Each structure stands twice: as C-alpha cells, then as structure tokens.
Length: 382
Ligand code: PLP
Image 1 (cartoon, rainbow, N blue to C red):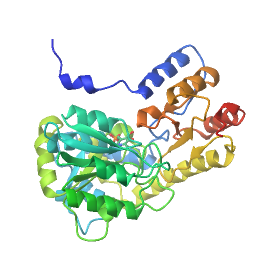
Image 2 (image 1 turned 180 degrees about the horizontal axis):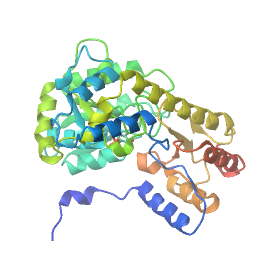
Image 3 (image 1 turned 180 degrees about the vertical axis):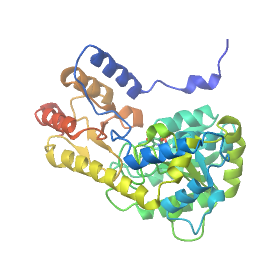
Image 4 (image 1 turned 90 degrees about the vertical axis):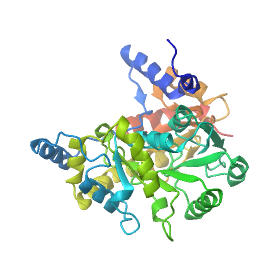
C-alpha cells in the first residue's frame, strides 16, 4: 500500500524521542524530574466541573451549529475584549487550537505556497504546513529571541501566503512589543499576507500583552487569531479552541471544517458557555499567579552559573546549554542519564544552544531541579 507522500516530510521530534526515554526510565522504577510537559498540571476547577455536569443534565449531546454554540461565541468575544470590532459571525469554535491552525492552513494554502515561521517555533507549525502541501520558510531570531526583521524581509516573495506568529511564544516566553506588532501588521498588509496569530498562552502573561485583534485602527481583514481554553483554564482534554477572523476566512474555514469535525464537542461547548466572563477571569488569573510564583522561584533561586531567558508569559523558560556540550540533545541526554532531569532539547524549536524547562509542574519538582542544577558546574557559561 502506498501512503501519502507528504508524510515523508514529517520528522520524528526530539521531544518525542526524549519522552520515550523518560518512559523507559520510569518503567525501570527511576524517579524522573520531568520538566518537558506542555500542559498545565492544575486540576479541573470546581466551577467547570459543575457546568459540565449541568450540560450533561441538559442532555446536550447532539451536533451543534458548525460554527459553534452562539452563547459560547458571545463569551469568546467578551473574553477577548474585542466585541466592537468583531461579532459572532467572525468566530468559529473548534476541537482545539491545533485543529484550528491545521484546518485554517488547509483552507488557505495551495500547493507550494510559502508560510513564514519564526524561530523559536512550535514544531507543529512546520509539520502542519507540510501536510497541507505548503512550504515552511524559517525566519531567524535575534539573540533575545525577538523577530529578526532583516531576515524576514529577505524571506518574503511572491509565493509567500501567510506568516504564523506565536504570541506569547512557546518556548521563549517572549511577548511581542507593540512596535513589532505594528511592523508585522504593516508588512502583511503591504505584501498581502495572512497574519496568523496563535495566542493560546494569552492569559498566562507576567507583563503587558495585546492581541493582534486589539491593535489600534480599523479591523484588518488579513488578521486571524487562534486561541482556546487548553492553557488558560487548564482544560487541554476538553478540546476547545477557536478562531476569530474576517468573514471570507471564516466561510472558507467552514467549508473544510464541516466535512472533517462537523463541530466541536457539544457538552464542552455548552459547559463553557455557562461560565460567566468574571468566573473565567478569576480562574485564569488564579492559574497565572501559580505560574508566576513558579517562574520567580526558578529565576530567583537558580544561580549565576546557569544562563536562563526570563519569560514574560507562558509556563516555559529557556536554559542555555553552556560551552561543554555540542548540542541540546547531547545536553538533554546528559541530564536525564546522570540526574534524572528531563528537558526538551531546543533543537525541536530551531535553537540548538538551549533547552526548554516547563514549569507546569509542582514547586517541589522545581526545587529539586534547581538544587541539582545549582550544584552542577557543567552549565557554566563563559
Ligand atoms: N499552540 C501552541 C503554541 C501550543 O504550544 C499548543 C500546545 O502545546 C497548542 C497551540 C495546542 O493547543 P490545543 O490544545 O488547543 O490544541
């Protein structure tokens, strides 16, 4: 049997390989400080549990409107504080943000269209573009992981169709400055590109954050925002994401969506639609404070021998591999084999001098990690 040739473009990710190693260690009874996890460790909040039960009691188990439950779309506009520029016809509820990005790419890309992806990148972007027959074009970053606009300008040509921006960024934790957002917006208008803004970490922010949807001025038809509840309220398994975009984008997205997912899960949609704007804010603010405390714990306790990049958002932080290792994979393997610490090699994000720490894990584990790292000379950055 012959499979889809596009699958040849999908590479096994370094983080997957590392996860396999973690599993083997754990199976052999070794205690691993696993800081690779990309999902909140926090429990489902009581209010959400109650709303889910309420949705079950309402027997809300049938297909919904393909665009999503109206009340939830209204809530989504309120969460994003953009209701004067967009209305519910601009919103589609999806089974997760990942699905939203893939279906969007499916609906906008023709074979060979180029899509700009910025380093450090979330690895799925590359594979999604490849699977949709597009060509990922990688733009370098500056030393502080901000956008290298000189490189960006060199990479745009007549085949470029879109750019994908992740703000706040996984893995660097950077938040785009307003100046950079304005510049990116102008480049997309001038070159007629879609600006796809993945804002899945938009509520986990420790300094000022603005969505592309909230930029001053009149609404831009090329801006497409993606978001969801996986990270904001620790509901990765509910599989609820959404897209907010111009009506043309929405109608083309729905052409694909209706034949693939039909709609997002009805119980989850109903439950979330029953949560007030205030309740939603209380939950994500509570979670943000937890992540902030953990971030500060690492930043304040890790000693000067280790070079870290302090995040402005997300629950990730980058740690430099220092001078003694040739690659992030070599460094990760060293840490797991000698100290039982699992971190994702930066190679997975296009930055081979760094590894990613996830602090979506207990303070106790983070304290153990810091203790080990602080006692270790190999992280010395000259
Ligand atoms: N976008 C980024 C940058 C992510 O890191 C992740 C998950 O790790 C997602 C999207 C996926 O979100 P969802 O769970 O809503 O599909």
